[in-house]
Length: 366
Image (cartoon, rainbow, N blue to C red):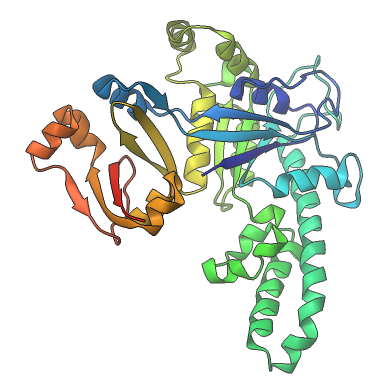
């Protein structure tokens, strides 16, 4: 499944620098607002140490990691919901994304101008929140008008349900909260799915700090942490400039040496992608054979036929059984044959719920 994350934030907070070290695609990075006009799109492989280990054991002809599409969206300013700056174009780009990576400037540097003249990540967050909420409120009110009369008569039960859900979201938005605060269940979400609400998308706040704060954060990060309590959002501390230096290193050994010198265990971009997976409730299963070892992304809670359908729709339609091994058993025993001999290869049916790290082969007939 194609996962798309949009990098957003005020102009000049480090979005394009972060994008450049996330992706092979290179966005222009410069010290002035609206450097990015059109959204840059790049693809990054999802870091997963398990895939590397499986490759070492199986020695396949091909190794295929799963990928994430990253979209660097132009900087937002006050009034965007009314068309200021790049306005509606910017907001339209966000609608297409599954999750939002909200970059906040959490560093002081007199050589890098701030669009509002001073560094205050909480204020910056609130500016973008407000613009997105206003745009969502506009969408909710427009749809509410279509259902209001029908709902008040009470004769159309679906219209009543739709209207009630819309009012629930409207109350949250009018209270200065995001649509996420309405805490809609899966059934309620169906009534607003067509609106593609901007503030209902899961958010990862990315605090862009100076190099000395890469490991521990700083006072600005604590401000953001306090301001986002109760949002059910992820928060990540990263140094975009340092990440771009790591990305520029050619060998794995050079990167590891650089990280060791900085007292870090892995690049921040790895943590970012993993956090995005948690945010979207995603997990990975593997297929492993001599021709190919491959990672596949699915939603947590999916059953075996749904997981098979990610490979090909015919696999889901004609699903018969799935042969399943856990990653721990496969690595511990060293091969599929050893798992089979040890009774660790299971045959599962249509109701089997796939676990993160499962190694699977599907039997199907169409």
